[in-house]
Amino acid sequence: MLLCLATPAMADTIHVQDPIPFSESAYIADNIKAECRMGAQLATSLGSNAPKFGNTIAFDAEAVSTGRALKLELVEAQSAGNAFSGHFKSATVRGVLTQDGQKVATVTARRVSRGGAFGGFKGSCDVLERVVTAIGNDLAEWLAKPTDEAKLGDF
Image (cartoon, rainbow, N blue to C red; front, side, top):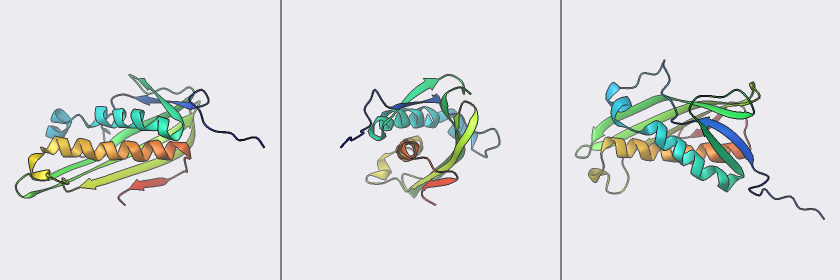
């Protein structure tokens, strides 16, 4: 019996832009864009989680159209509340997985957080960055078996 297992040598390499950009059409507050490192944190999370699911992420300064590529955009980020009244943070990411420029699958991932344990001691950017860390893990798992029009996380 022949058993095939994904090993690092057999893993798919997927090109991703780093940092993940904010969508030009998104309604995201300027202070979130300026102060929070959501795009960089999302890329870091995706890159560190992908090997658990048999893939490797190659980071590029700009989106690429050759090979296997995942074009992601942050399309929504909300930062309501604060450490005293309670956090309500959310983020949504949309992506298109391509192979040599041809669409393979699309994905939308969304996560919501109320700050978690000791949320009162965390700033808004900390909570938003934790939200995109969870999205990065969701996307890494999806890349192992991508389905078109997937909805991941909190929908």
